[in-house]
Image 1 (tube, rainbow, N blue to C red):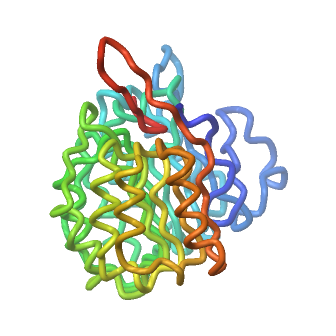
Image 2: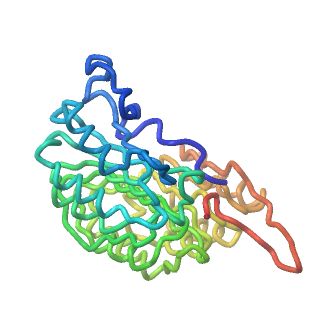
Image 3: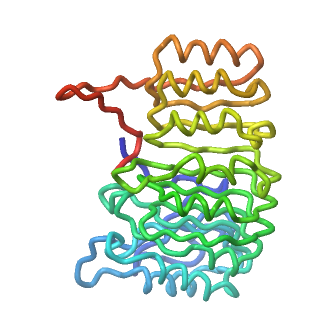
Length: 321
């Protein structure tokens, strides 16, 4: 499976594509700057004469009343499979005085036809946190060259990193950050053949929850080591204060299901997400039977069946390349 659609909503706002050059129309035809998340996207496979992102962004700043803009979605940029997001991060940082109301940024809203998720070259995104102390949401798609040196940010409530393979070093650095207001942390760990070398030890600072006192949603998703993740989560201190635990999109089997059943009680959760899994119907039924009577919404939809080829068993995450 690949990501099928561009973001339609971000930061609880509908996404609006900033028009191409010459198509802006009258300013009155554009939406209220505060009412939408502005998607700014350039062609990843640019043709001569195509507007590049570094040209698009100044045009946006000069066309829209950016003092009211609350959310920006960065789509593609020229040759995103070779060029990193560093220049985009730098441009957003430099524009901080022109974006005083900015509350949320998403970097890399691309589909496979733009750039495969495992090909997207990111960069150190933490300068955005330093430049925007009031930022509430940060989303990143792609983990190539992604860096997240440990920082403290007082306001951030939502952090999402979507990847086909997330290095353990990035996970460790995120775990070393201090995010006292963070309520939603979502990491797509991905596959080993696309860069996921995350171990339970890498996850330990997150699972301890010491630096995440407000966390209510934890998503460790899209992993080819989902059984190991489940075993680590089963005894993690942070789980006791969660409302939602999401282990979906990965290669969870009966082994992971047994770890969850044998671990700490999960009856306090509002929702347990396990969609796209490789559990047997019996194991999925046991988890549902253990939690549903306590009011937990258990999602065991999209059951997958392993493939047998050349004497080997093959499983797959929901999103890979």
